[in-house]
Image: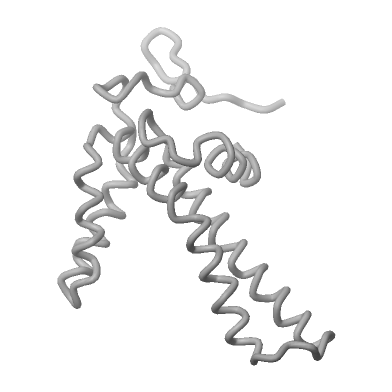
Length: 151
């Protein structure tokens, strides 16, 4: 799964889909996509503000405005991929409430680290939220795992 595949899947196909499961790669590639799109947007605004002198406000305000627009656009797909990732690790979406506790100074950091650890847990096969993604299931031969080798 490539970065653009994940962006298309999370933003266009499963924008507000809170059911099902999301793999670790889908979750972390979505966050990488959000980070890179924010950086690209900021660089583009800085380049345009140097070339076009018609900006009425400083470029920092334009960058904050663009990042705010991206935040609003990415809020729902980010919540949905996070809920689906929690489902993949066998946990309910109620763990997402702990993100709100992340805004409490000092104590929030503990909850944020704990949520990050939850997102890193591997999938344990089928659970109440659906079957495991067959693309991420390791192949077995005589009860031993076999790795795919590109030739």
